[in-house]
Structures are given as structure tokens and as C-alpha cells.
Image (cartoon, rainbow, N blue to C red):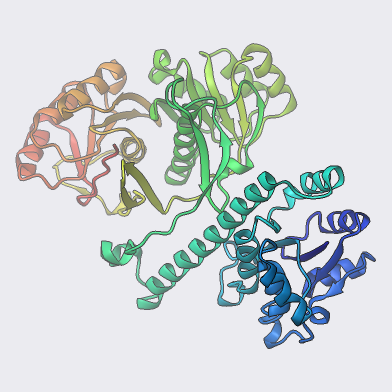
Length: 520
């Protein structure tokens, strides 16, 4: 039995190769893999010895040879294939162990692997007769099966072949995405994404390969299956999460925690002072605050809507120590708490009081570049919503201007509103969300819900609307509650009437340059 080993990721390689050698397998290798095996004293033949041809073109050509691919692709059920190999002196290859250059992390022309995908695909195509391993994590299971049975079962070879095709499909998709982005940059390296039209940004064919990263207990409802997938070859912040307690995460736990974690980081960037805490329920903020004291930030976030916070997700924008943990533990039950870290005392405090709560230590979230939503056999694709116009570019359109404190609150309200389901209106006072109106068909109703939740806390605060006020009525609801400043995109044919009504009501109004932030 012969195995061909040619891997970029060499984790576990030596032990696996020794295991095969101990079982009597003949090993063939090349390049860096051969060097690692030689240094470890693992007996093997180099590819050049098998092919009779030296590596050439700086290593671009080494395994692309009939002596290699004939041995991989031969159909052992066809005598004519075996006869052909015998005539040419080509030996069979029974196992291919190969993973590809790390193109997704270091994209370049030189890291576009040719020989590797060719070997992997050849072995996967011929999986009736040849095993193929692309994931070092499979080494122990493969060795165990070979030790116990002397050969890989048909089921195992088929499963490994599926992994192999997923591996090469994801690799090719990453190359296509890189070429798309390279083309964009070559047109005008200094231009922003906004300078190109949708056709330029969204390619005619979208190559997307997803690999299952984790299973969920169920989907949105218990009768639905659910899992988290990631783009093959790329990591998500979820892949760096450490769960310290609680049950397995559900589909909605993951969905809401992602919304909360991203919002906390966005508030941290946009507000630039203090630590942020956000409380999410059904992917919408029901509380958020920024404060120099993290414990106080949680308390103020909770004050927005403590009733809705029960069973929600708490995202903390700083390390959780015993003091912060004690404050959170005294609050309503949270399904998930996510933070950069928890110290030992914090873990004890939270797990002893909230045994069902999932505690997640998490790295910062990766940026979102593209969003995809399925519609049966159709898919909607868009680039991610982001803030294009900074607050210092907003235009005051009323005779009254916001105070310095109101400018800060307008910025926070704008961020929160953009991450709230439309129609959305958010009221913020002193760095604290005090009222959130989410997911309403009527903007007036959204404003009314926000001020009803805020009560007297709305007075002299700031509000944001995710889209323009088509009439003055929604803005007047805010003015009637004592809100002192409002930011909205503008762009309505009745903007003049709305501004005039704001002036008459004695509140400041700011236009955000027509930048709307619908979220569905």
C-alpha cells in the first residue's frame, strides 16, 4: 500500500506518517513535506524518485506527472487500467494526504495551488479505490480504522471524498472573490466602494462554499433543524468563542448574540469614550448605554426596558470582573452573556446564580462585507450597511442647534437606530438608550412606542429615525415628549414642512445627508 503526502498544514503530519509506516505503508512525499519527514527520520521516497523528473519552475511542477496521477486515478475494477500501469511501470497510490496553500489568509498568484487541487480531486473522483485526507483532524480516525480493519471502508472513503471536494470548492471560491476584489482595486486604487455601481460590486456569478461549523439544538422553533455554517476556509469570530457555562447554543442565541456583539463594538467605535453594554432581544436593542464605569453601563442599559431584557442577550464591551458580574447577576435572567473575558470570580458569581446562562468569551467580530438572504431558489445579495456620512458632516436645518451633549446622544441614537428593525425610532439621553420603537409599519407608532418607554427620561434627549419623516406627525410625537434634538436622513418631498414644524416646536433637527438605514 502506498500513500502520497503533500501538505501545507503540517500539524500532526509526523505522527500520522509514522503510524502509516508502522502499518507497512510505503510513503511518497515532496517539497516541504518531504523535508519535515526527513528531519523526523520517517522513511519515504521523494516524488522525483517516483516520476524520474526533478521538480521544476520553482516547485510549480512536481506532482503533475503520469506516474503520480496514473497511480491515483486507475480504476482497480478495470483490468485494462491495471495492465496499462504495469506496462508503464507505474505503481498504485492508495491514499492521498494533501491540504492546500493558505490562499484565504495570504492571497497572491503564487499561492494559487495547482498540483494540490489536482491530486485532491483525482483521489476524490476515484474514492471507490483511493482514500483522500485534507483535514489533519482526520488523521487519528483514519489510522484507527486502518489498524483495526487494514483498509478504509467505502463509507469512510466517500465521506473523505466529500470533504475533499468541499475543500477545493472553497479554495476556488476564495480565488474568484480575490480576483473580483483585485479587479475593483485596479480600476481605481484610491476609490471607495461607493464609487462603483452595483454591477461592479456584485459579480455575475457568486461562488460560495459553506462548511458546517457547529450544530444548533434546533432552528428558530423546536421543529426546525438548525446549524451554523461558515465560508469554507475562512474563520468567523464565532470560531474563537469559548463557552464557560450553560446549555448548547440555539439558533436564536447565536443570531441575537451576533447582533449584540457587533453593536457593542460599533458603539465603542462611534462613541469613542467609555465602555458600551447592549442588551438584545429578538435581534433588536432593548437597552444600551456607554459609561466610563462598566457596571454602571450595564445598569443604565438595563433601565431602558428591564422587562424585555429578561431572556435576552447581554454584550459587555470590556472584561467582566467580580464587580461587574455581581451587578449582572442581580439583573434579570439573560440567555447569553458575551464579553472579551471573564475573570475567575466573575465566572463563579455568574454560573452560581445563572446556571442556564451561556457565558461566552469572544474575540472582536470580523467585518461584514456582503449579506445574503435566501428566497426559496432565489437569493438576495447586498453589500453590508455601514455609516458613510460622519456626524461632523450632518447638517443642522433648524434655527436651534443641538447642544454638545445632544450631539453625542444623536450619534448613539443613530447607531442604535440603524441596528433596529424598521420602522425604527430610538431615544437616547446622556449616553443611555431610554426608548426604542422597533419593527413598526408606521413611523408615528414607532415614535410613540419609543417615547412611551422613555417617559420623562426623553426630556432634552436626542432621537433618531432610520428613514425620513414623511409627515411632521412622527417628529411632533418626539417633540411632545420633550425630546430636544432629532436626526433623520431627510429626502422627503415634505422635508420643508417637517423642518418648519420642528422650528415651531423649538427642537433642533439634523439631516444625515439622505443616508437611510432600513433593517429588515
